Length: 149
Image 1 (cartoon, rainbow, N blue to C red):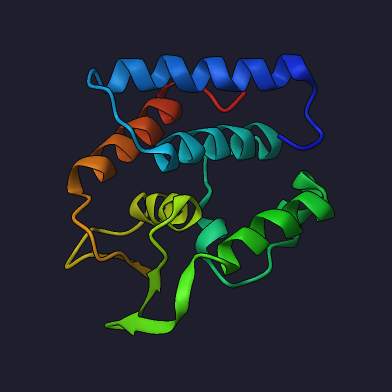
Image 2: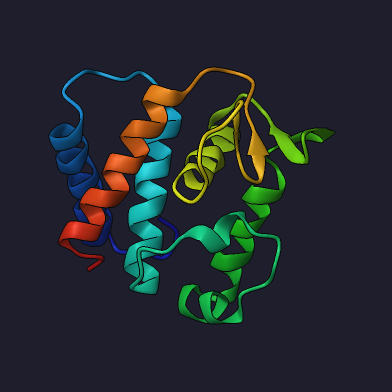
C-alpha cells in the first residue's frame, strides 16, 4: 500500500473483501490468501493490468518498473527473492517457505501453471493446497470479469 492514499487503500480492501465473499462462502484462516488478494488488486490498480505473472519470473520488466515506480517494483521483486527455502528444489521447482510470503507467491504461480505433484512452476510447496488454489483462481477470474480500475 506504500504511496497510496487512504481512500484508494480502503477501496482495495473493500473490493478484495467483496470479491472474496462472492467467490467463497466458507471462512478461510490463511492470511496468505488475503495477502495475495490485496497484492493482486494493488498491482492491477497501479499497472492497469491483471497480468501479474511477471512477479514470479526472474527477468527484469522495465515497463512494470516504470508504472509501479522503481522503489515499489524493487520492493515487490525483493519479496519474491525471499520465498525460497534456500537451494532446495523438487523437479526443478524452487521449494517455498511455509510462510505468508512464500504461499502468496505460490498462489500467484498457480494462476499461470497447473498444480501438479505439489508444484506450480516455478515453485514447489510440500502441503496439499488444491482447494486454496481454486480460491485464488476464482478471484483472478472474477477480477478479469469486472475491471482492473
